[in-house]
Image (cartoon, rainbow over all chains, first blue to last red; front, side, top):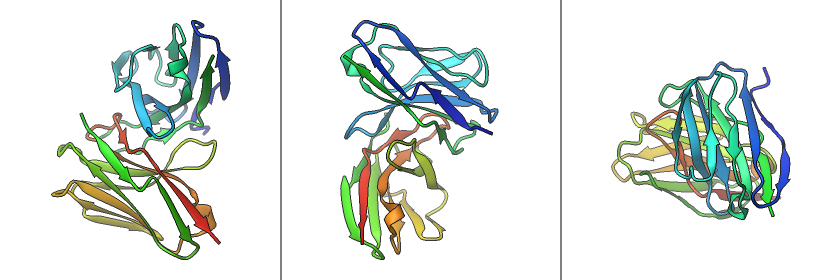
Length: 113
Length: 111
């Protein structure tokens, strides 16, 4: 049981480039989320999904796209990277009932030059 | 939307002393309050949580208290050890997938 896995661990992009951050979980969790972590700002919700085929916006969705074609995978896409998207990105998953524990992945550190 | 404030931003204690971190939240509908510990280079890990129908919860050296009327909750760590050094985040939620986090407290336990 690997839990929540994220790839890559580190990534450097140039402004305007696109990329996809991968997230997968093997716990059969319905709920998956993406957060970004910036110094002094805690973690902020970008997008979340309550099940395959269903996604919704969080607090800071601009510049990011998501899709959920399977229960296991929840990729985050940056269509045209900007320096403001330099951050550490965390994926999380939970069973979905209110108050269930969210399990976080190890994170992806993204730098946009 | 929900807003969570966390204090202090840094906390230094001597080994064996107690540490207290406090959070306030704004949305009275929030009903789930987890605390996460984040070690350097890792993702946050749940250490304890409390639901709105409970006033206090304890797990060995860690305890959390909740005051719904005042809309604040606190993390208490007793007999601190060097391995407690990390960044701690509080959060509030009324749904499973939408946690609102505080800004974090960096705890340093000195020998």
